Amino acid sequence: MSEPVWEGYLRADGRLGVRNVVLVLYTVECASHVALEIARGEPDANVIGFPGCYDNAYAIRLMLALARHPNVGAVLAVGLGCEYTQPARIAERVRESGRPAEWFYIQEQGGTVASIEVGKRIVRQLRERIRAETPRASMRLKDLVVGAECGGSDGTSGLAGNPVVGRFFDRLVDAGGTAVFEETVEMIGLRDIMTARAATPEAAHQIGAAYDKAERYCRAVRQYSVAPGNFAGGLTTIEEKSMGAFAKGGSRPIQGVIRVAQRPPRPGLWLLDTVPDEHFMGFGYTNPNDTEGLMDLISAGAQILLFITGRGSVTGAPLAPVIKITGNTQTYERMKDDMDFNAGRVLSGELTLDEAARELESLVVRVASGEPSRPEALGHREYFIMYKHQDTPPLEVGCRA
Amino acid sequence: MVRAFQVHPSDNVATLLDDAPAGPVTVSGAESPLVLTLLRPVAMAHKIALRPVAEGSPVIKYGVQIGIATRPIQAGEWVHLHNCRSALDERSSTLDVESGAVTDMPYE
Image (cartoon, rainbow over all chains, first blue to last red):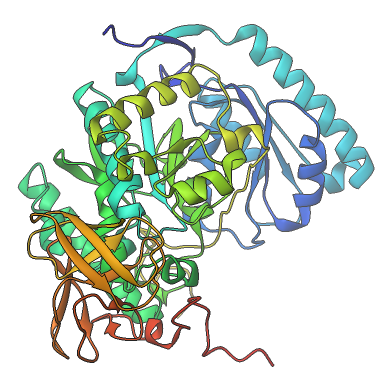
């Protein structure tokens, strides 16, 4: 069988995208309505934003990673005018990456109506420009970064949905591609199993440290990453859910741990640590939802996301197509419009794991070539960016004694 | 017949691949096929005990401990929140056993 090849979008930094999106980004919740109205009805326009008025280094790193993502061709940053986060600085960094970028303050434009009008004009200009100017280039599996996350898991997720993704990840890594999986808070109880998968002693140290932090975090915030739907779906404990979740990591060595907004430094399988670091607010906010996890995987440069759901999550993402996989045939039949792939056929004996992984690979290639995934076709573009602290300076910094 | 799957040879539970009425279940997977009698109806993707599990003993799936039996469990019995607890997460033991719904949060 010949290796699949398709046409992607070549960015100035040499990275390749599978979509060509105009990103509308807002820098405080007060600007969110204007940003959403600007993008409403505009093809290829996606929105993300940060709700806080006080800025946050983690959130800025995350937004810059999303604004310079390979699937993004151009950016419009919209601010209100009072907030700490600076849309001008975001636009400047995006321009340095070779992408066109514009920004404005709603207060300076004269309010809501004027800002929506000027914003729509800018979005249309940016879209025409990137459609005309972005060079196309051949892509292969080695050019893909694929992220995987599970949500709404049930008793089938660990038997079919996640193992099929794991088997596909093995194929992707063997083809020279990059696979990223996350959810260290859903690997609780598995320290030895995880560190045994490390490619190097350094990677084992990183995995062990990320695991230890995740366990301390769960104890400190008194919250384990397991929800009512998981229990209704037959999962009894976080330990059981964890073994199922870890199966999406396949069987290849883990090269190391990356953190939010970091790109894997080389191809292979990588673990993404999305858990906050301990700092002056303790761990801060609790692990919020699946949407945040998808943001974090996109920030690692994933052009395509695989989302495994036993119970049936409908969520999508801006920038990167989400491919929805379920290991539960009942869920597939009930929510067919939302599901891209029924891994439940492995449990019924219709397909082997290898056959399912090959079929999933050809679906990934079709979506990479431009075919919309189900959440993409349905218009799901949920996003979530919040205050968090990773790599924050120590307590003494920022206050007068 | 209703099917269940055992992931690892050391597991003392199997996962149902079909919605099951009370009655016989064929278990495939790690060991040679085994037929168990289910004591009550159990939903697909839930677990059943392959052999008796003593109170305080580990519940094993994927070859690892996924919980601890909170009372004696018979072979063929549904294994879930009513008879198995996490070693880490206390709150899960307070959830409704059928729906998983929260029971400990005031809505006042």
